[in-house]
Image (cartoon, rainbow, N blue to C red; front, top):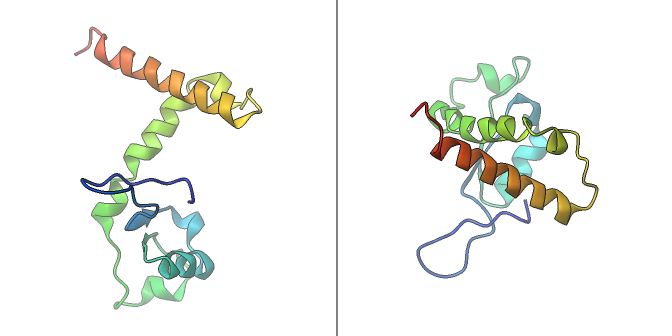
Length: 116
């Protein structure tokens, strides 16, 4: 979370987003408290066995949660590149370069495909 930068129209980029979405695997009181202490709204569905799941006062933003599919699809596209999925590059700088190359490849494929 320390590497997140949210651009704004003016000034420095913010280091913290307003909201953070995650799947049920991140549904724990510790993570929710961590986000709450930093002023972030947690968009994380509760597990079936949690009390909050059955509490009518607890609300859940379904539309905000659906927007995380963009991130999930991007990760899926990245995993098409075997080099990234298996983490051949051990240094972070080399791995980031491979991720950028994969995204460039994906963008070029989308721009110049005949399926448009």
